[in-house]
Length: 157
Image (cartoon, rainbow, N blue to C red; front, side, top):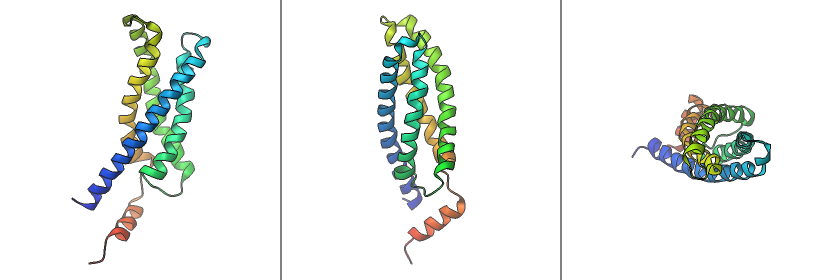
């Protein structure tokens, strides 16, 4: 196996671990905020989603930066890129969440469960979308940095 493919596999495994934690953490925040804000009307789950996403994205950013992609410096730039990737995902998710909640409220025997089920489904889609966005945009490394890293990791012949 090539060293690069081994690195990519390790990176993907770390991403899945962080993504799994972040999904559970994010859904927990979403459920908590949905419950806490339920008095704000029938669309309070959208407020909960925005608030939970802001916190979850910030936590995920640090975990991805330090543990998954292991980049140095560029905190503000990478944080903004991370929000760009997640922001796109969140906007798509919020639109889909509204549609899915409406459908589930009509289909479920307990319509009050609709926002929770829809939130869980939308998080799965967001996790898949975000890996490629983060790998290729948020935490991308300049080719010069990649070349330097690969030369320093190559044992002498």
